[in-house]
Length: 469
Image (cartoon, rainbow, N blue to C red; front, side, top):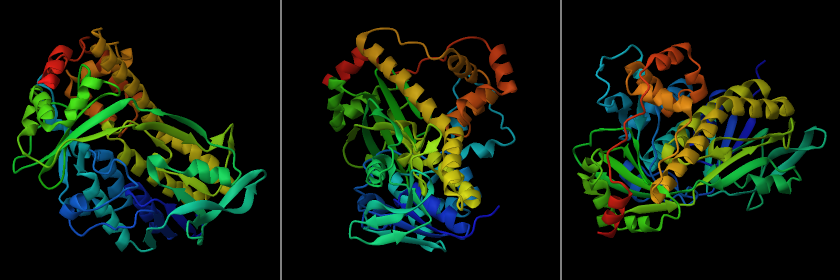
């Protein structure tokens, strides 16, 4: 049954919030986006990078990437958005160009185009999305407006408060049939719900355990990908990402508290370490765009707003990082967020007139559809942190989960499994679903059992020498 057109307020005007607003407006809803940062997107990509101040997004100038899953969802739900990204200077990325030397079968396959993504730096991607939202019928974007609290409404379920809109810090009431929290990883929703006398959501939160050091470059020759975007190298990992408009980034990340690595803040030290990594050294062959950008204190957090089968609130839905956020180096945030926004659109279309049913259906669909990506990342983060700690202490790294190790080892020998691995890495399918495919099980079972070759780079002793100069 189709739901009647409604008034919806989206709190947060980032990529996911604006995308959710546009999707909901395409179904005829009147959507108001309230963004606390006052400045709108500049007119050009250069200004978006150099001059746009987004204090509400702590990682605004940190590395971001946009996976093929983002493009696929955008093409289905928001036609024309991919073209806007390309017009802003974003670039196509083909992960198949980074096949390892162990794969000699380089023949294309039908459907390879679905593994293509369009990516760029976060300010440029967001500026393109913001321009699309400004042009979208049914979407009103109000910047410089901060939400203070949720407005109480008539309960849809006994003993459960209902959100009927929001009150801003200036005392303005914005009534709505649904409040969407897209305020990101710093979401104040716990305080909003407490003020509404709602039971607290079930929350898991901890420091992700990583610290990041990033440098941006520009130049006429984009670096070739000789390895995967993320390469684990003992106690560090190196992340290399394409950007828009002849830019790219290199990030070294490590375990928080690894004191010697603090010298990576010095550009000469950063370049010395990356220059000792054979697969990444050529990524330094450009003009540096400033110094090294450090970031620490990333949060792994997830919230469930249905506890013991009962919603803590109705008339409210958290989307993207406001629902769950993980280690940003994996690049999942924007892509999983867009999948989540599309899921919200389709549930609102059938459940909005039944707020209690919507709350339960949203929780169930969230955990089923995007929840696995968060759980996978948490497992991967714990494994990587354990490997970093072992390298620091001179111990052998702990083995990865057997099923994952077998799959990754086989993907280095089988071009079709390599494509499947890209699906997993870019959030096109959860790992459990991938490993359960009969063809995958058969190919993994018949592959020669050997671990993936380690990536070349400095060991711990050599790393310490490079850091010390």
